Length: 260
Figure 1 (tube, rainbow, N blue to C red):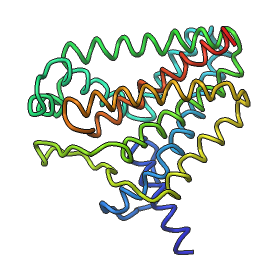
Figure 2 (cartoon, rainbow, N blue to C red):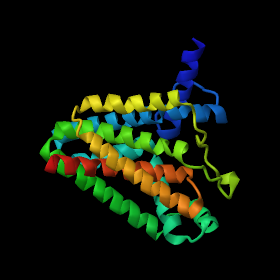
Figure 3 (cartoon, rainbow, N blue to C red):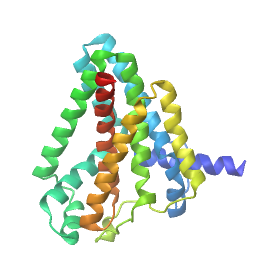
């Protein structure tokens, strides 16, 4: 029973960290619990993706596809509090407007959104919208499954940064956000990856393994860029990896469905 209780605490911690979903009981918090909750990050992605898919499907029954996608994107932002989108805009501002590790990290901690962040998030949302629109026009039901898979896989891929790159301590520790940054054992990584396999079952098109590979390649490129300029990753870097790899998953699916 204690093991089950601990796992529920880890999952609830991940749920509170990544979403605005209220958890109906008080749970303890510690750095250790935060780190152990990382195994459930992708499972939270599966839940978020499922909610997105449901909103898209129900909205499409009332409106056209374009409006349904916008409503889905709004619900996603409300559900997660724009957690990953905030990280993406911070990364755009800091790497776009800063030079050198110290300057980049200083800009990254600034809560204001600059020109690079504004332009970046607008282009990201546009690319996400038109990708889902194109996919939904071809096959809406498969696109619903793809949305669940993209949300799950992108959070899993972002989580692997903890295993492949070094965490960079923020310059201003007082502004640091709680973050899982210590690699766990292989079994924890497997628990996380199982959520990706479950998502694949929702859309049994194994060609999408290539889309997963494209998304992971995007993570490798971003990881190389982060390492080159700041020596590793921050929490905002993880958020940007999630957003970019989600979009890469949609683009990969478009390529596969068009040419294979």
